[in-house]
Image 1 (cartoon, rainbow, N blue to C red):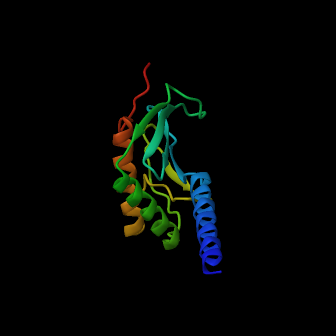
Image 2 (image 1 turned 120 degrees about the vertical axis):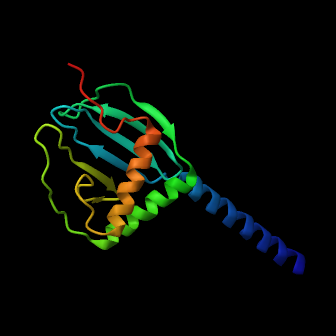
Image 3 (image 1 turned 180 degrees about the vertical axis):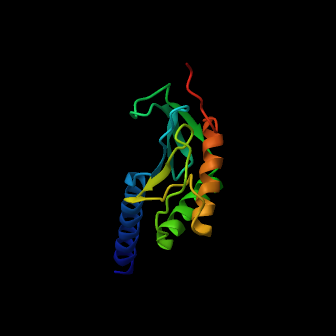
Length: 155
């Protein structure tokens, strides 16, 4: 009797572990998209980053079309973790979008979209510390992706 009961417990435990493992394996990576509009004189870019630190980056024209090849890159897991934690903090802060003065030729707009939320323009001075942390994360990720700070258009 005790043997049957321990076998049932063992089977239930194994079933639970298999179910848990299959759920974890099928859980998609969360991703965030960093989108820069570019300007009259520079290309924009689109960078996609997953929670595991994998990402892709591509220069973009003003109409959103690719201006070069898509490149894969990887950031350290701790940088990815900080980025997604800072995204969560920025979303909770509910900092209102505030515009700022920009050059007609060199001004651009940079947003991060994640989990149904879009950041305020990160090319304007940060409204609070959580947005400032996000600006720092985006710059680190942009550098790691190989996208230059100011990708000039070729004549």
